[in-house]
Image 1 (cartoon, helix red, strand yellow):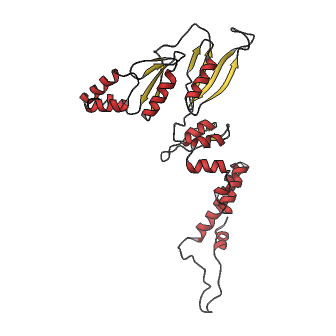
Image 2 (tube, rainbow, N blue to C red; image 1 turned 30 degrees about the horizontal axis):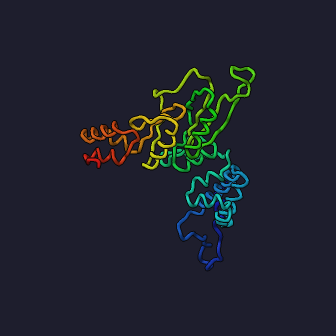
Length: 294
């Protein structure tokens, strides 16, 4: 496009003020170069069309309604989604998300985001809460005799934001009776596990355990009571559940106490921990401070 054409878009001639003066060209009071403004307008138009072309029909409609016709988002989004988003009720937001939703976000030095797309309502829900959005690369496999489906049901009832993903069955190929459950894939608060009904050959022991980080003492109490029911309480925050799987229920701040730069504080906290079964964060802090328990 020639400069003459660009100039013609933003410049116009006015009636001359007199025969002795040249025809003036209208200039912008704000100092913006008309050529630059015209070039920018020509660039933005096609770019906007490209963006609109990448949107789904519903997204395109929302964009046009809001940005071109000034329709508020409150009048565009469904009531349940709008309420959940506005109030920060992530559980309600999870309930209205499509199970196959895909979240895409930029990952830059300025704003951290997901370097890859995050698939599924649960993963998108966790991403919205600011949790780790990396795709899970390692999936623990838990060996059971015949209790994999029962155990998955128990664990998904204990942990929030959990679900059973898939169940497979043995076929006539064996080695166990056809039709019996072979594997159960499930998620606990977004962490994927697989339970395998492999037989009685192998059992769990304390060599492998799963740590639960708890923000409050109430959370410690909850997981301790639920997971140890039918199982066995151990020392220092360890327990075995009814299937023999070991868990560590740990309050946040525990590591800072036992690794305190003051060796005497760290020693007092460590000694207090060794005397506990379920961990009590208030008692551990008091012990670190040298305050006698009552």
